[in-house]
Image (cartoon, rainbow, N blue to C red; front, side):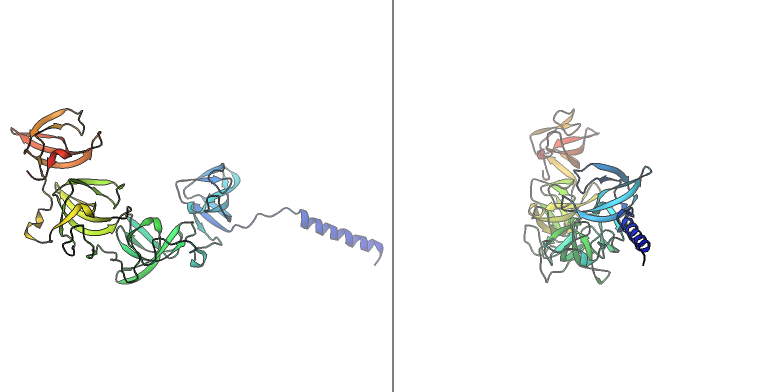
Amino acid sequence: MNRKGIKRIGLMSLLVLSLLIFAPAGRAQAAGTGTVKNRVVNVRSNATTASSIVAKLTQGTSVSITSETTGSDGRKWYNVSFKYNGSNKTGCIRADLLNATGTNTGTSAANTSTASVSGFGDDSILAIRVNSARVRKQASTSAAMVTTLNKDDQVKQKTAVTGSDGKTWIRVSFTKGGQKTYGYIRSDLLTLVKKGDASAEPAGTTNTTNTNTTPSANSGNIQTDDILTVTATAVRVREDPSDSSKIITNLLQGDKVKFKKTRIGSDGKQWTKVSVTINDVRYHGYIRSDYLAFYQKAGDAAASTVNEDTRYVSASAVRVRESASDKSTIVANLLQGDAIDYRGTRTGDDGKQWTKVSFTINGARYHGYIRSDYLSKTK
């Protein structure tokens, strides 16, 4: 080969090499896509909530997921690209704020971690703590749904895993429609009923009572709709078994309630779910079990008087106020032993419990508030 041919081959080789080195990089293929779950989500410049906000995306907005990373908070974040106001943008979104599809991480059981995750303990009996919860095939909100369970439905923990959203999920078993079913529920949607016991079985998805647990007065197994009585001076009926839960109503010593079931509260103590009727309105809620005692079995002759609405003034004299405050206008004065109709309770501006009452004097009907500690169930 002559010198000119060798020179031409050398130049061509250099040209190919330069093209390989300096050719513009193509856009990386997306690992998947995602849609924004929340009403508004911040896209960050880095995988931390302390970094600057690149953009604010609204619910349903689509993004391309290019890769994933672990943020400074220890949680999973996605590196994303998207169009924003006509421009191409990139940034980071926390994984639990996106409905991701087609990512390499997937949602299979093989990709969930069980290291240092215990949940409530294997074989523990748990109950749904929210109005309803979806049971998923895998530990991910994007996984297929198995079924839906309602508040207080019980399940059994099989194991706990870290889901694709970085949160703890519980693999559970339960019986629904006569069939044994398995699936995953996020741990923050569950509450503990009974610690792990391999022989224990959940009560199921119907309102079945665990008859082996009783309030503090141990008078045999308490059954559904047995009558209990309030033993404390006054108790608050809560929406959930927790002292921080919403107050549904207040009851006084001697008031009667119907037993529904018991469960362990967030304070580690036993609470009793009860029902009670006040002024023809039916209430359901929780009372600490040590504030209740067994009164009589369901179906007994006196069982129909679950809650009387009459109260009696226990102080020498009381002022009935227009509202729940010592500074409020005086509506009337009552004496010890006077009877009033109970209408409900509320917390006054003094932080104490007040009872809303109605009563008749000389043919005229009055309504107002009396401090609850000035009233009694008995004359």
